[in-house]
Image (cartoon, rainbow, N blue to C red; front, side, top):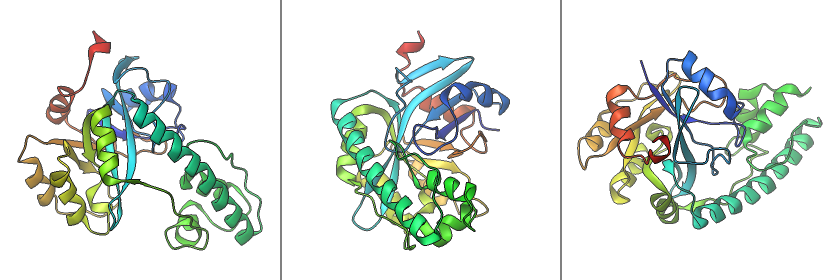
Amino acid sequence: MPVADLHVHTTVSDGTLELDELPALAREAGLSAVAVTDHDRYHPDLDAPVTHRDGVTLVRGIELRAETGDERVDLLGYGLHETDALAAECDRIQRDRQSRGRRIVELVEAETGVELDVDIEPGLGRPDVARAVERSDAPYDYGETFDELIGNGGPCYVPRDVTGIDRAVELLSRACDVVSLAHPFRYDDPSAALSLVETHDLDGVERYYDYAGFDPDPTPVEELLAGADRLATGGSDAHDRTLGVTGLGERDWRRLRERLDTTALA
């Protein structure tokens, strides 16, 4: 049973959870720690790399998308210390996200003939659009919206201006205590994605992740974790209210926690 869910999204990006709800939901799930890893931005109401609220340890983090040239990967940063460079890049990304989101909404409305109830604001992501489509009179549920409209290659898909991998690693390495590759088996080429852990000297890799029915062989990840004192990370990738589907056990959480700046807890 996991004690730490280190991959959770809130309404600051494309999740449905408010920060104030997290401690109670974490306790219900039997968790002692949660990392808030919103897409391309960090939560403004977390004021330290690690804090303690209502009996639960909250880790300030981020999930930053990076362009490798062959595909796009996601990097998780934990124990985030705000830097001017990271703040500026997050601001740039959010402006691009808003512009992209507005265009996606326009395309979906033109495709379906239905007006969507969605706010074009910082943090807007495709899940927000998909939820708006599901609430509307359009004949698509959440999954069908991705499959038939806004998924990669769909008629309403709009690409993003993504941070390059070298720049992304530099920004996160300077701002975060731990940098990890997210969900390695979700990429088109998992081997190439995993190679980034070594070539960019990342601190860890997301070992525990719910691949929704797909059960990949973890051997390549285990081999990476066996060397260079790398850390296992893991979490539910929650965009809803369900926490602790997977995550770190006590031993792995203790190892990772030792790398985090916990001075705010003293």
